[in-house]
Length: 276
Image (cartoon, rainbow, N blue to C red):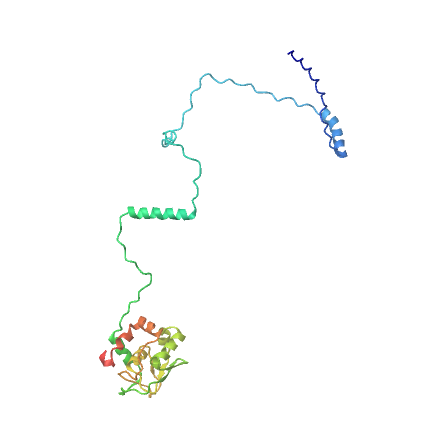
């Protein structure tokens, strides 16, 4: 089979001219400025080149500079000591529940490793109020200081009593019910005047109780505060009067305990002042 004749060479591709870039329009004032700048730039003198300073050759041998003494020797780096290089990656932040579980695990491990210490008694932050029983001499002195006539009546009158306490120009009414009328009226006076000191400081303090004599318990309290009978019809007795239980309402009870001690505990078991 005869060989194929060689292919004729391809004619060279015609060279295309470079693409023409359209010129951007120039504003008239810019064109005038460029035309004036050409002649002016030709008149300016050409600056002379700056002289190059000669290069000084370095000496063949130079003594090393003395190094400043170090305050303390530098510790070798971990890389120099053969340790593994420190990672520059930031640790991954674990979710909050996982962090709390890990923290509890560490605290439990720490408590197990530490020796168990004796549990100290827990102290309360509240101040415990110490109850001080009033002295008998204070109570008998208060009974004697109550300026009222002494009555020998011991059976008492009706179950309800009305009392009027006059402190200065103010009058406070009291009636028996949840306690004796004198103490209920005195409790209202304390809430109005604010303190037992204000009651003691008053110049005029009288009690008007004509239904029956004041019992020895009310007479003690009234005498400690400096009260006297409003008239000769108000008297006191050395025994308890009536069937109403003698209790001190608040805040009168707390104020009397602060100044004179626990009066109610001492007089509750004594039927008359002679048995204190």
